[in-house]
Length: 180
Image 1 (cartoon, rainbow, N blue to C red):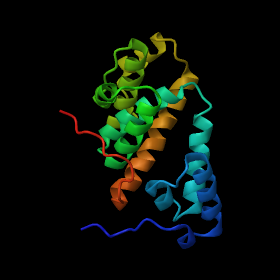
Image 2 (image 1 turned 180 degrees about the vertical axis):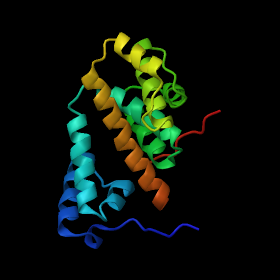
Image 3 (image 1 turned 90 degrees about the vertical axis):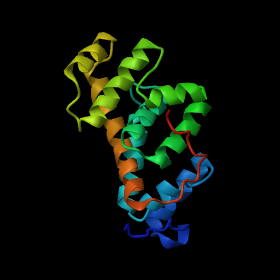
Image 4 (image 1 turned 30 degrees about the horizontal axis):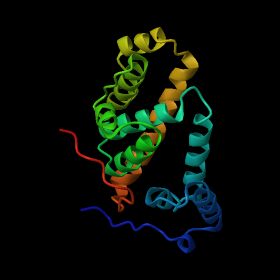
């Protein structure tokens, strides 16, 4: 049986985390339950936010980052991240059907398909990705820098997926449809 971990309110975290909550709320309009829960440790929340923010300036577009988040969260079975990133992916221009395909590791666009196949392989194999997929990734014009950033984006999602798995906090986004 899991230990019950509640989503903390702003006044239940330290001052450093409260400042981060304020920054998140200003940017996103709310502090999602998962971020609030990470806020039990201001250091973990700050490190996560800084890492994600740095990666957001890299080789991948916001739409591509959502695809990575979807496929990695599917690999890890994270209902919270699937809900959040399905909503964000639709906001970024994917159709609901495209989000379901991406979660399976499929995209109609060959370059996007190559990227999500590699992200899926990295997540499934704990970093030991299929070498053929790495070769295909480079064949699509991606650089070594992009490969390192892709690995970072996978790691960011693994972190949030694992926090959810450990805490099983309430999902505060519309639930993602199951895959058929």
